[in-house]
Length: 395
Ligand SMILES: Cc1ncc(COP(=O)(O)O)c(C=O)c1O
Image 1 (cartoon, helix red, strand yellow):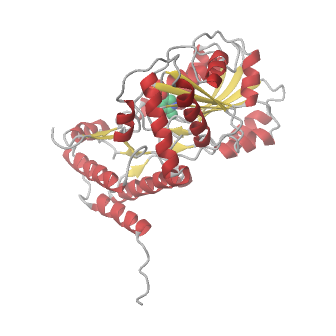
Image 2: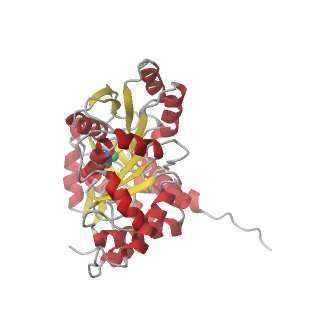
Image 3: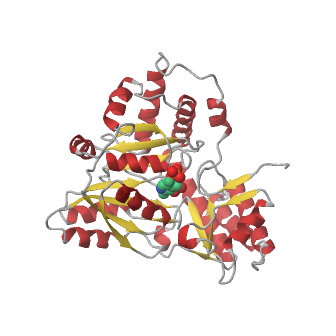
């Protein structure tokens, strides 16, 4: 193959050269003197990215799935009841993870393409006069549908119902690309992996745990050993871990944190919103539909594109591979009905335009008639409008 491969799935994302170089080094002694500075910088940087002063950072080798499990076993006990929402593949699996751990899950089924309505949270909790729900589980950015949920609104709904349930939020495809405000939104646990907005290869799970979650953790009786956050937190405060950490990934994570903070978190998030809008303009110009039904909830990190009736979305994926472009497949009940364009992580306008060109080519090769060039043109016009500097008056 000549040229580069376009990995435009919604995670893992492209790993920038800077991060690759930071990890390309000899393994260090994880009990040695270099660790505290490395861990200290990562923890301080991640706290800024989660926008928290009261949350504590917990790292494990693992992926988002490991982070789900860690969030549950550290805060809940078998038999506890939680409120969850099925708005897509990942929110359903988070609920399923809880169920397998012996937690009683009330999973509210909603259309795939919608977010979690705060009004439904309020109503459910208001009816729970015995306060049986110990936690509310929400996926901030549902990666299978490209829909975000209003976490601030959900926090307000919990407060309006005067309910003490913990708020556990999956920010796997949100952190670093969608605004996450841990303190302001009263999140009790936020969880993620490193392979999406944090731009690293897959391999690490990250939790941010607030004071109420840590207190609940002291009482929770779920069986846990590796995932027990108490020894991890105790060691991490000293700059070490109670297990052998993914040492080289830590160097990558430090570099990723530096990159995000150098660009500035607000600018990173604005870039994601801009690139996402460019993609949605392109999809509309191609005559295709975006799965997300409420434009205010469309994801800044990925777009799920619905193919016309009778077409096979996976045929688009196969055609895209011929142009060295990877797009995301439809998951669960969306298999064959949607393909997903990832636009998160280390990405810029020209890369998005190339991706759109690839989508147009792939649709055409797969037999879906789209006006070639129309998507690229719409996206280009939008980027030009956004970035054009107003002409200065002649002297
Ligand atoms: C929102 C969300 N949660 C959880 C997961 C599971 O994470 P992992 O595949 O890293 O185990 C994913 C994976 O894509 C995800 O998108």
